Each structure stands twice: as structure tokens, then as C-alpha cells.
Image (cartoon, rainbow, N blue to C red):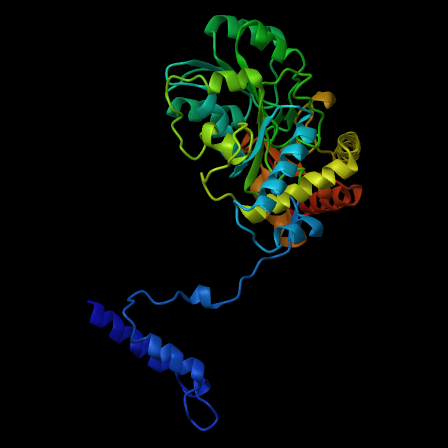
Length: 430
Ligand code: GLV
């Protein structure tokens, strides 16, 4: 078997070493000799042809729900030389990241870190650490993120209760309190930035309700951090997480998360160990220097370049200021709404104040195939916009203008591309 593989590979190489590969005098060139030599090796799987071609990455306008385009300053930070993940300089950078997240979240929580992984890593970390098998959790579902957390909690053996609304709708505090009274959960989940529906859920007062009923309040701000106000401490949010790739404009792969004292008390007084070793906060709190112990010991190898980039993105947010960033997202979103309405398009979330400023959802225009429109826009304008996600599929198209991408000129580009698609994509008679 091995011989046959070697033989056929040799024959292939013989064909390839035609005149084109030979030197001027018919002698084989050094690279060809090297390749022939390699053909005598013991490996039976040849190097894949794709790996012998250079990496190609197209330039695209990422005007979807994320990742968004990464500014040169953050790209440059991510390409700095690697240092060891346990070097003192790396700890300094991680300490800076912690401070940057505390600012972005508006929290003084000591237990504030960045996960090695995307927003999903933070989502799982929050649930795995604060909930034990058999405990009751309550999940507000009005888009994909609640569905996702419910599935995660179910997988780890929690007793999951779902409050469900159609995408784009929100839960009143009264509805939330009634459900908490009924199910007595140890944890309530709510997405502040529901990117699948384009909703920015009100948060005020919910943390107080949770405290009253001895329940932890877990909030997802992956799509809203830096784009819409959130005040972790003032709003009594017990666990808050986000992602790097949206308004923060870092590459995907790191995820800020913070736990307050109530959450720490619950997660560090468990009867069982969390199901995940990688996401166990006992270890992560030490890795991030949050547990008060003098030594940080090896747990896992963090994404060093990803942390450089995250630090830079948090530095940009700190230089700019949260309030200015929130204001800018609001202003550009309002500009986009006007343009969309001028095109005759309908915004999916009717209440203006509940729209997520970073990701705008448009009801699919009657008679059009949304997939065809999005494909047309990518093909002719190199712009990524997306359809819905989870329960909002077939209901919406989504435009994300986040952080670095949040400019009126980009809104104009998106509007121009949409106008072109409306003109040139088929419209059914139905
Ligand atoms: C992902 O975060 C999305 O909203 O599509």
C-alpha cells in the first residue's frame, strides 16, 4: 500500500519535472532535486497543493454583525513579536487588559479577565462556573443568544426554564419578576445586544429584581459593548461578557468577562467542579492574577497575539471615551435609519429606542429573495451584510456598522449597495 502510494507520487513528480522545471542545461534545479528527494520519504500523504500556494485573503467591507474590519493600529499590535504567555511583560499586558475591560464594563470587579476564545467561550464560562447540575436557570429568549445559552445550560445538566418572545420583542421587568418567582432560578440570562434581531434590551431594574430573589443576573453584551451604554456596577449585573470582534474591532478570539462578588461567592463555593477544565474560573482567576496568590501557575497557553490586539482595541476605546463612542454609534445609526426609510425599507424593530445601534435589522422587502440581494451586494460591492440568525432567519437582513466601521460614509456605501440590489435583483410578483 505504502509502496504503491510512493510509486504513484513518484510518477506524478516525474511528470511535473518536465522541461519547465529543469535548469538551462537540462540539469535539475536544487528545489526540484529537493522535491524528488522528498518523494523518497516515508510519508504517504503528499503536501497538499493548496499549502504550496500563498495565502490569499480578499479585502472586504465587513458591514455585517461581526467580525468588523480591524483598524491598522490593532492589526499592527497583533503582529508584534510573540513573547511567552507566562513572561512578566505578558502579565503586565494582561493587567492592562483587565483595567481596559473594567472601564468598558464600568465595573470595579477584581474578577475581570479575557477568555481565550470567542464570545461563546465567555458564555460557556459564565454558565459552567455559576450553575451546578440540577439547578434552575431562567433564560430570556428573543433571538439566537438565549437559545444558545439554554442549550449550553441544558448540556451541563441545569434545569432550564425558557421565557420566549418573537425576535425583536422585549421582556418587561414585571414579566421577568413573575418568571423568577415561579421558577426560582439561580441565574437569569438576558442578551443586552441581541444581534440576531437588532434589539438592545433594557436592563435597568432587572439586577435589583434578581437580588431580591437571590438570583444571579448574567448579561451578554457581545454586540453592544462600546456601542450602547451599559453600567455593570450601577445596573447590578452580576456577570457580564462581551466579544472582541464587534465594536471593539479586534480580531475574533478573545472575550472579556467579569464576575462581581455575588457571582464569585456562588462560583467559588460549589459542591461540584465545573464541567470544563479550560473554563474553570479557579484556574483562570489565578492565570489572570485575580485570586490574590503571589504566583500565577500554568493553566493553558493564552492567545498572546490576540491579547496584544485586544489591549490595543481597549486602549482605543479608552482614548476615545465610552460616551463619545456610544454617541457616535447612535448618530450613525440614526443616519442609516433615515437612508433605509428613504429607500422604502422598513426597520424590523419598531421602537427606535430599542434598536441596537451597532446592528440594524431591516424587514425583508416584500417580493425579494434576501439571499439573492446579499449575494448581489457581496459580488458587486464587496460588502458583507447578512441575513437573520436562528429564529430571525428569513425575517431580516442585517447591517452592522461597529467601532472603526461606524461612519456615515460607510452607511452611504451600504445604502448605495442596497439601492443597487433593490434595482437589480428579481422582484417576484407575489
Ligand atoms: C453573530 O454574532 C451574529 O450576530 O451574527
